[in-house]
Image 1: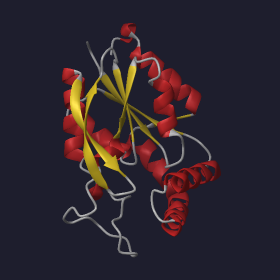
Image 2 (image 1 turned 60 degrees about the vertical axis):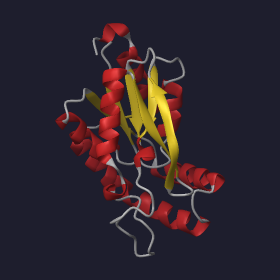
Image 3 (image 1 turned 180 degrees about the vertical axis):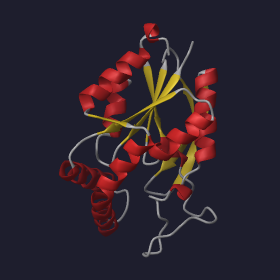
Image 4 (image 1 turned 135 degrees about the vertical axis):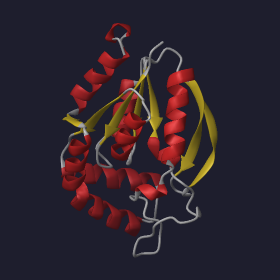
Length: 203
């Protein structure tokens, strides 16, 4: 079976996780959260913010080598061990064995999807990429509501980070499109996953 990778980028709160849940409901696509490949908070050399906490928006906080190696094993073998990361604890809490079954496409989303595209292409991984295009204000509201509900960080930290992400969103979108991502709304993204997962797609 030929399998491929679909990277989904977008600002935090844009609905990337919601998209992957919808896209993988029938078992013909599999979801992978790139955020599970963060380093632990006590990993040596992590960049820090002025507040003295790790700068989780910096790609140096993320284990790209492990992410690409895991994706490569999934595509080649249909299974691999994947880390489980607890954002509230800022560390990995275990591993899970992921099996693709009949899935022909891995839908991978996360904050560093943009950086993953070039690296995946350089590694010879068959990959397409979409930017989930939704409004900045709704993104901010969804992000803050989600993070408060899940108690990911203290409320003040979440608010400050949310405002910083709001201001950075236009530049992030430009970077994604410049890297090769196609901006699409939610419904079109779902159609793309459906096409990639069909046996006749040739992918």
